[in-house]
Image (cartoon, rainbow, N blue to C red; front, side, top):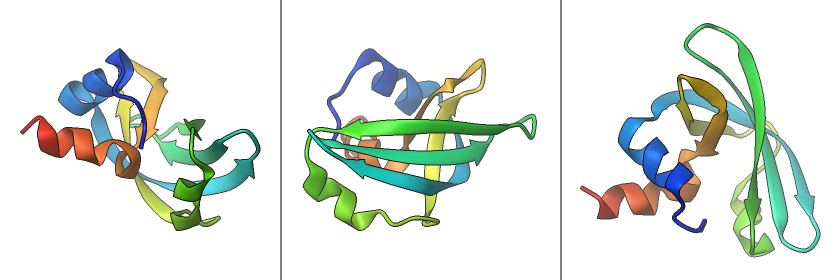
Length: 92
């Protein structure tokens, strides 16, 4: 689970949803999930999510398809939907 930040709130309310895939996992002092996706202009974007608990990374595998929420005006601002979906469900 990620901490609910201004970025997360923005993506929940205004983010575009697209398909992406996990490209790499790193575990040390927490965990990083690297992923890539195509934005609405067809540009391949790469990003990562940091997780405070490496246990959460077990559900993610390399080349695993994921849904990504991203800011169309700033695609660097993105997150894996699976990691923030609990906030989306609470805000309905």
